[in-house]
Length: 101
Image (cartoon, rainbow, N blue to C red; front, side, top):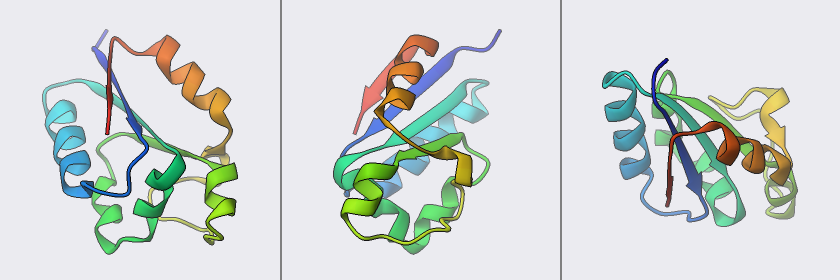
């Protein structure tokens, strides 16, 4: 079984670091799960957000997404991955390593 890395994103900064970490981890054989919440959901509005494609499973907090009046669809995030904080809790239980941006 591959190691699993969880990335919890609360900031609307450092998208380049997020993509780089996810890419490096995936290339090293890790399974990557990303959850965006708070201001992190604003990253979905950046052109470079689509660069996460193929570098991990991405979900986000629908409450924050709606609070910032953002619109779906979002590249990389499937409709079923607009979730609640429970998804974050599931991620914590399912990963071997966990980082926060």
